[in-house]
Image 1 (cartoon, helix red, strand yellow):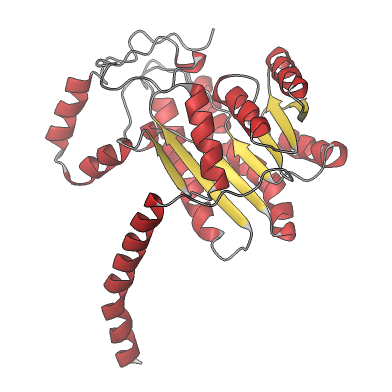
Image 2 (tube, rainbow, N blue to C red):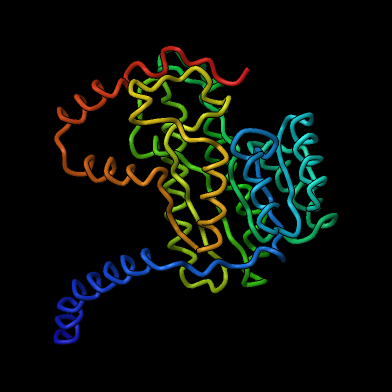
Length: 302
């Protein structure tokens, strides 16, 4: 038994090196993309922002049906009509993902009226853009309930059927702020960090479940109305992402079964630097980049 354990310990670094080399080689080759023509996609927060572009992109790349969840009927209806005109069947339902009972109720309605959801995109999120001491207690709770707990309820509602069918995909639109928080958005950063931990745990938990995968997207500041007024100190060096680009890359990551997607790819360097640099150096980076003041002009969604 001891000999076997010793051999496994010896082979472990070799195995890790093989995985790294394999992943590097595969990244240079064109990936095989799965077909979306039989997929039923549900997107939370699908009426506007990144969610709207995700709905259009899934429809463009051949999804059989697209379902939109959100709290604003006008936005949901406009997006659904636009997608339906393009030739893809699209439905929308009013649903607040922070409300557990409402999520379970609407999930049942979706199954009865539309069919089994095979791709779940947890995109709904809010940000209040204030420091801890300036934040209203109810606003803080709202961020956690929508950005974090909402994922628990939607995933619990749809994942069991995916496991039965041995076919499905759970997607989370997260944020690089989950790994590199900034002042002035403590509610958002905290909720996204919790959301990332949820997805990391879920991804590992589904390794032995054939046919069911996860994708977590961690984009840099994206130019949507949710972060209206936020200013980056060097926009030429760190330009805000376009929501349509985030949507395109997300759908491509789903089709190639990519577990984690950082946008842009330079965000990998940020995470690596944070893992070994002293706190004083990190503080200077934040000061230089202007992250201490980037939320001072924040207006948010009007």
